[in-house]
Amino acid sequence: MKKVLQATLAIAILVMVPLNGNAQCKGFAKKICKLELTPYIHDGNFHAAVLVEGEEAELYKTFYSDQEYRIAICGSDALPPIEFKVIDANKNVLYDNKKNNYAKTWDFKLESSQQLKIYVKVPSSGSSPDAIQQGCVAIMFGFKEK
Amino acid sequence: MWLRNISVKTGSFLGLLLALAMMTGCRSEGSKNTSNEQNTVDLTAGDEIFEDLNEAKKVFYSLPSPLETAVLLKSAGAKYNESLLNPLSNANNYTTNRQMALNLGIFSTDLSFASLFDQTQTSINYMQAAKKMADGLGILDAIDQTTIDRLEENVNNRDELMNIISETLMSSNSFLLENERKAVASIVLVGGWVEGLYIATQLVGKSPVKENKLVERIVEQKFSLEIVLRLLEENKDNPDVESILEQMNDLKKTFDKITIKTSAITPVEDPKTKVTLLKSKSEIQITQEIFDELREKAKNIRTNFTL
Image (cartoon, rainbow over all chains, first blue to last red; front, side, top):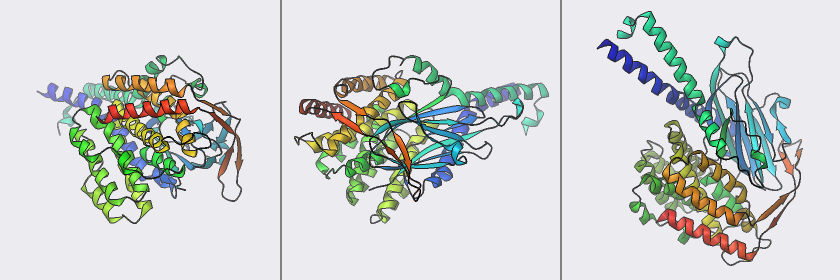
């Protein structure tokens, strides 16, 4: 009976842990990162995941002319400051937050609509392998109604 | 209590399982992307930005949300036309996951469109229709009676209305993603995007395509269609996604007839506002015939989605 319970616990842990990680990210995005968008209106999309130190992510999105946007990229407290770059179709870096004191937000508008890539990296803190941190990273977009 | 009785050996085993589970949680979507990216190596013109996709990275594809779509339509000079919205009575006809997911997106775009044009009662009615779809899909608590009440209490507060809509969109989207229902989440997003395309093309009607701001907005959806296709490709193992992907590939054939030329981008930051202007010029080439074909295809796909 005890073995059955132990096996059940092991399976439950396997199933629950990935969900808990994402569930934490939902709360993090909604309660913490979304505040960074103020006074812009959040578009309602959800892009967040648990990342570990050294891990990278990319997001592809079309941004439209004459709209004013804010990008907010936040990492949970356990993580070092998150790096992000905004890159165009010709691989030119349009913005690099490392050159702006690891700012969490960037405000911009466009003369013509463009498809852009947001490159995100959780820097490595140089900790020993058993002390590598992981945490939620959220990428959120806000706009202004004209 | 019985946890205390687990032997050290069993505890270590469980610890190993826990570590494995955490690794799975962090990387599962990344590995899905890896296999799917291998399916989408056939890059076409205009795909340059996707060329250096690193298989090990986590990749997100972001479509204009129903709220952003409605804002884009309004800023391009669209006029409100309620007859273009999916009739509320249709909500009772949707029983399959495919129908409910597509029409959650469609009703969300209709709701956003009505709301931006201060159509209060219509907004509330469409929120109810979206709730019916979300409930049918088992999306818990994304839209509840409190949401409807808040909408009614804030009918004269545009910012708060948009905030409520944004919250419901995020709650539905995050619920599906955190419950490993990526395919359903992608169908909802595509449903909302197609509704925006349908409304916009219908609003242009037979007006000339030249120097028409709304037509420009429609043409620019060529960029977002690339994202639609990649989002669906990621989930094409799902039979519902597969059929939608076929229709989107057909739509691409028409969008491929449209040319968008864009010059290099120069970022210029305004020292006062700290807002950066991305300076660039673009040139669009579309004929009346191609636009008519696009409008017809958008109508047919939307009819298929709302039947």
